[in-house]
Structure formats: structure tokens, C-alpha cells
Figure (cartoon, rainbow, N blue to C red):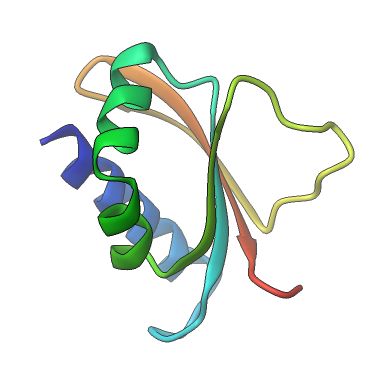
Length: 90
């Protein structure tokens, strides 16, 4: 359930960014709880495919010079994470 909720949040972010269905993204999930990290790692390839992520990274911190096209702090079933989405190739 956790992974499906994350997927839903990423899809909503893609829509908010105005991306087309076929547009690819680079996605970083930052400062996620251990539970979120484990869930994403278990289904990493499928998750990346579903959200059209060219790259997917799970990190504890993100380089401050990075400029995401979209940022959102989320709570999924009581587990915190931050989503950073970048238009792939931009």
C-alpha cells in the first residue's frame, strides 16, 4: 500500500508540473523513513517504470544546488518523505 500511495503522489506531481503522459522524470525521494526506503527498494524497478522515471534515487540529503521542477514534503501512512521531481533531460 505504501508504494501505491507514493506512486499516486508522484503521478499527481507529474500532473501539477504539466507533464505529458510520455514525459520522463528524474526522481529523488529524500529523507524518507526506513520503511519508505525498504518499500521503494523492494519494488524499485516497477515503481520507476510506473512513474516514468529515467532515474530514481533514495537519498538522505540532496545537493543544495539542485533546482527541482517540483518539490513536495509528504506523509504516507505516517511515514515522511520529500519528493523532488526534475523533467528528465532538462
